[in-house]
Length: 394
Ligand code: KIV
Ligand code: ZN
Image 1 (tube, rainbow, N blue to C red):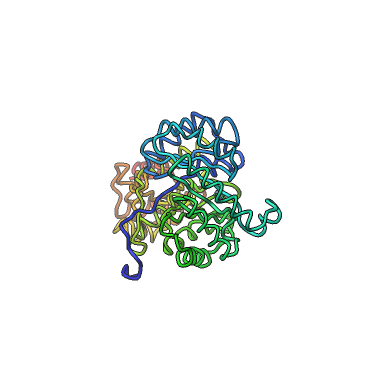
Image 2 (tube, rainbow, N blue to C red):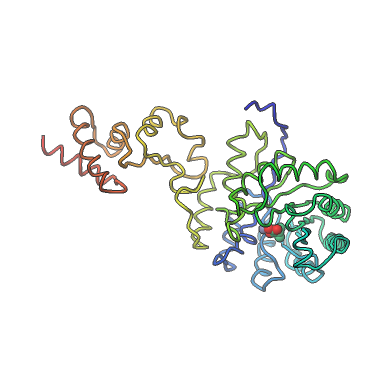
């Protein structure tokens, strides 16, 4: 794909991590204060730009977490969530006020379904409340994000109207949530393009996107939005979040890093910290990472098939588009199993201190294939035993 087809900008895409807020809303994933502080520090080390630390009005625990993280962190913006209600906004600011680099994030649903069944408000009332919420927050803090919840299912004319009003009221970031993971990439890209083209004051705010993964499209939708002009992506470690989760930070970041030729955009993320933080969050929340999860799963850089292993041993780029070291793994894993070939067996034997070739390699390889048909995984100890057994026979 020629890179000249895509608009290029040196400005990195802002990574807004909401593991501690939307991620924590995942059933069974709540974290205590010291766990949240540990994750917040790991997010700073990872290089995220914004940490959404919680929703202060919801509980004393959330309030304390936002407050302590705001005081602890200087190298990222710390954000607290609030509905467009006075008590929420004031409580969010109370939690954030002692921090050096803070943002209030206010939200209000805008889709017809939410207006009619949840809020029972008409369009004018929504605009009035959104403006009042942003103005109140802006009187407290210079950095304000506004989210029209369920934006992806909101009529586009009304969405444009709300976004324009929120920016006029002082929002510095406008976040477009696909709250229920309903969008598809082409659809979501069009939504962002329409906002760019129709909202007259859009260049006074950063456009952000916040995609849920109900159709498995959160990462694809976020990338499509970046192509249309979004400058911030909201995401979580391991894609943690309600239902099927949120846009996975590690996937979206590595897509932009690996396909920089296409997107022409990168992030500030120190990608070698991806695997360590994935393990930290998984350990704390108890949400195990599936083995074949892109980027951070145990199999993400494992190869078992003989043809692949042979290619990898000759030149790793034959079957790897990223280097495992770049995401925090120590090395590629050439797993020995029934699909593996001679080259991988000889290579593993060499690493274990044995030299295998000629008839000895043929014999050990035959033994190995018999064993691999019975066992799911072959360990180094198994290989050593097979070789030693053959060696004693000669
Ligand atoms: O999914 C959503 O709409 C949200 C908002 C609060 C941004 O999490
Ligand atoms: Zn969300």
